[in-house]
Length: 118
Image 1: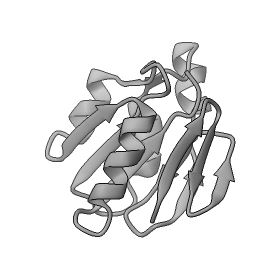
Image 2: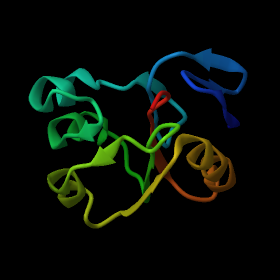
Image 3: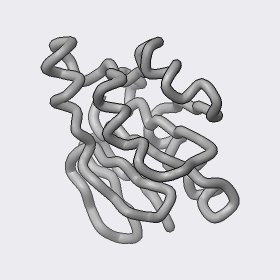
Image 4: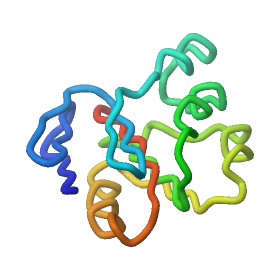
């Protein structure tokens, strides 16, 4: 799997362009981030709520990688962190997170959440 963050508002996975936030599961499945679950509760999708995070906990993983956006706006709420307390959690700006996923893919089971704007 090859992930690129070429510009604000777009992420590319194996040549396919996505213009919205995505979740990449350890199996390679890609889904749209259900950010409205956090936005409805907190007035912003920049706070990753546990109810939203639970939606993605469908496959076994070792590392939760969060691409926090071009300027690092997305963050895990403390209650969300508690849900994955037994896992490694890495939060990085989306460009750095994409590079890290490329390095980890195939070596570790990674659940990746990417915010593609701010």
